Length: 268
Image (cartoon, rainbow, N blue to C red; front, side, top):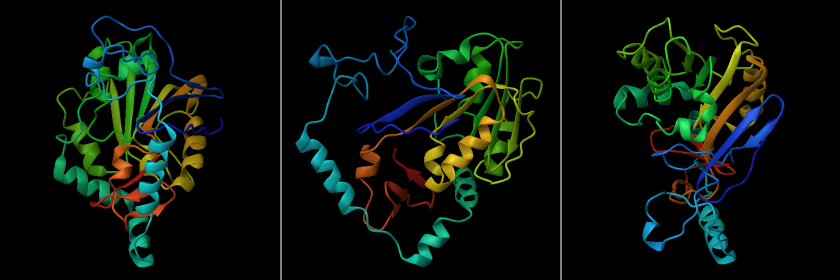
């Protein structure tokens, strides 16, 4: 049940966190008419360079990495102590305001889920989507799976996001249940039986937490997994363009930033 980090350059980090094992997604099997998994994307024709946003055989040279480090160093100045204290507290309020403004229009449904995490489409399973937002993981899973194959929970610390999920035409508590929850809480309690889940998805979620809360969060969530259950994790990698574009004054800690709307992001 150990927390695991792997540094990647300028892209997404895709990891399977099991109990207790950790694996990086490298399964080479793919379905017809879907994009290949990370780990299987190799640029063979220069004309295809823009067909994916990342290629697996591309390595940075020393000059490129030095340039990225320099850009990060230049944007590592933080806000005043008073402003930083405000940014590091009541995170749910920032995300609640975000969903109040954008509703379900900002993020797209994650139909790539079954490419990167093929376990989600196999057999009967119980799933928890952590940081469910407006349901961008919940509803693609429900749409793909037969009614008797899956039950999915969704939690978010934004009450507005949870209400958006519940207002969706596919929301049916015989197949899914959404609830408000702060997964960074020391005394985490959820309306789910411990040891009952096959999978927990954390997609661009840990990066929104204060880094010092991450270990506790993963440890607490692992209590709800069955033996052999897995946490499926995807998040931002070090030197992503989003990190390099931050301005000085937005940095809250090493590779940890506040966006203009007050929400936070960490780059692994």
